[in-house]
Length: 336
Image (tube, rainbow, N blue to C red):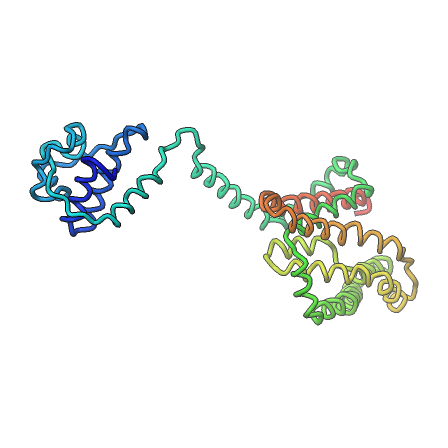
């Protein structure tokens, strides 16, 4: 490009054309012609004769220094030539641009099709995730109608199901999230008080209002006196809330159930409900703390892997939750 007839052609345009649009077209055309023997392709210019002068300087029709094969590509009826007016620094810019040109690949997949498919999946997954309450209700109805379909999923698998749910949340978190939440403990304290003050009193008031028999009233109060569940973490994630805060609240109320549930039942119902403190502590580690820690560790050391599986995490959480709910309902389908 920097010698011979191509130099004459490029320098001529750099010295005589002051319209940058036409200069760019003419110069890049010359570069394409120069590299075409090695790149395997030759560009064509379907330019009418009447407009050729826009791309060729006046007086550039008589030079015999550019081969006829080159001129047939540049224009059908003119032959450029003139005395070069050199601006070498600009020439080097064009030479560098020509060196960076690579031939088109015919074997690479079409990224637009892949991205369109993935975008379609994300839209579908978002719709499915937002309908989480409907899937839970449908799972409950299914378990009531056909409890045998969930007989295989016994309580022995509950720990694994809850762990899978919390792991799908853990990969979205980092230690900094919990540090940030730890700086505002008032939210956790308020939630703890609402869980073990408002909930049992509300359960007692509803039971009295609807005149439930003592057994159902005791059940209502007992349900109101226990900790929050892992499904709340999934709902927080779906709502794009503060998952770290939700996990911390769940952990606090779960550990608090060791002493709060017996105290409340004794105070409201006049009887002590035995609580397996060691079992609750171990269960909290298995289904909350360990999966969250594993998820955060994976997120830190294998971010590319986490980025690849993250779009599927909400679906895993929804499936685990629906299976857990359906199994629990199936086991109590006869009394229900």
